[in-house]
Length: 393
Image (tube, rainbow, N blue to C red):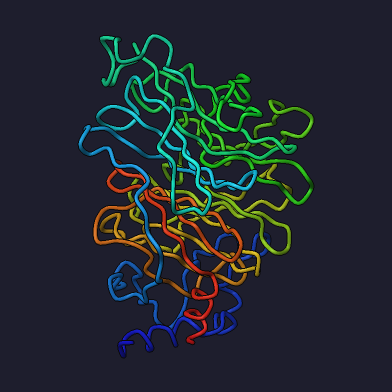
């Protein structure tokens, strides 16, 4: 171990109570606090952290699919564990991202590292297959599917995907579909639109009150802003939409992420496409019905997608590209309360890697990501080793 490693690790372990109480964020008392990354090891400008010298997490690594030779695109990867198998889905298309003809593929694995060959989950977008004159182009004259994640609801597995025009982000026919896994364990049936004029970022998660919630961007979200859909219990397509005011004013919000805090309040994070190079944060204390105006935090960001989850031991893990200069490396930040992160580790890098999604299973953390939007890859981290690293063992 290097001298820097042990110095950095000792700094990571400083307790959050060392922070001034009036600066500490709280969903009700201090929603305006920008504090999200803290410790004596954090410089005044977190963008100047030497990301290459962060303590490194050991992991097993596998490339699931690589389309560089075909000049294709793969991205929007999502993991799930269902019926004794790992499941992985992603967007797969021609050329650049989200062009006419893009579809969704999936793969399965018994252990999260040995994956089956990818198979198509969605059909060809109507009138937009390889025989279409618009295939592989960016135009409203053709359609594309975009992978949106797995949803386990009432014992069934659904794969979510949006369909819209491929001219930009997004087309006026934007709709979120659900594909239900059939009893043969490999075929999928489109059960229809579950949310009109909606693209989510991650599949629905349970709120403490039993409702489901997921983020929503309508096709004109750059003007209308982001919102959250709450419901999904009475019917798979029964939702109420609640706006997050300021997501098209305070920032150019993209790719919302949220989780439940230990006290039952909610916290949401937003990528800022105005390139502030910081994550924005908002809170809700009424189960997602109203949200505080998003505040720019001190947590650095490469203007990229992030993913966070609460582990079974209560620790919050945020996986992101926190080097503001480039999408390299992927890092994992840890927090005891989901509000302020005081430990930061290097997960994978040396090249462009982004779009993380993670799953905890049987003592391991599996993280799926893509490499330069042309490969889908997975790393497996032993949580016992991550805990030991965090504790300086």
